[in-house]
Image (cartoon, rainbow, N blue to C red; front, side, top):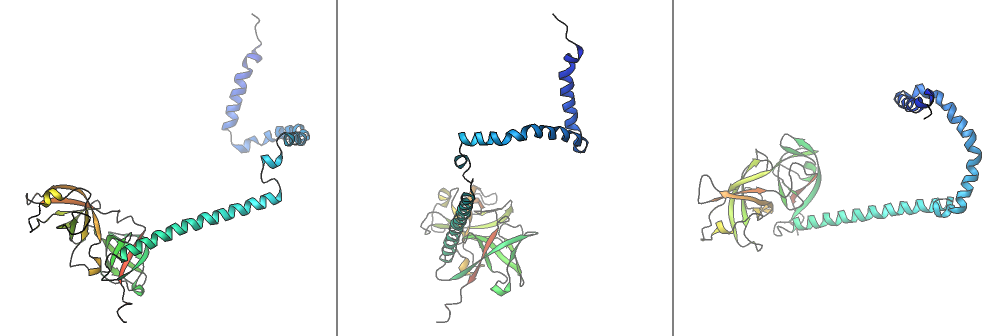
Length: 287
């Protein structure tokens, strides 16, 4: 076997090592390599145009690149612009339709006590309070009822000025207990009372009252049933707003004959981007 010269044996390792070292060097130290690039361009540039022409003969430019001409580029740009406008209008139409459905469903919940629902964004959280961009110029006052998604009870305004309003969610630890109805069926005729208090983690908990008519509510109450507001400490137009749904059922530790339910609102009330103020509609007071 013929013995190879040392230069041949070490050429490959030397090349690999040199490449690795050059990759680790700062780019400012490699400016001298631009000379090699310039020499390569001297060789490649004369044949680049003939190669491009040969490629266009095999793959026509109009097929390979739809935007080859100025007219095509203009038409494609117009098409993209109008397509974006169409998608934007479709999205806006969907959003407005959902907004109308929300407002209609919320306002129709108490037909005998008409309300105006004013949507406003949540700008932040201060301690336990939601900071809402609104104020007294919109008849937002202390104790104004606030909802989410038009029907989910959120809380009440505790402070209001000309520009902002602070809302205490019903799940906040300082919120007052709520008296509500457990909706035993979809008709709304079969119900049972419960007193709910916030327990943290966005939940409310309380005992279910035994019905006086002898109804066996213990066997009727199930996980997933709705609980709605029925509390005379709240305005009439707030009655039957959704508090949440039953998440768990357990015997009451203080009264074994009663059941204790845990209720979770339909959304996390501390993370909502927008709320609705429910303001009484006074437009129909004067005929």
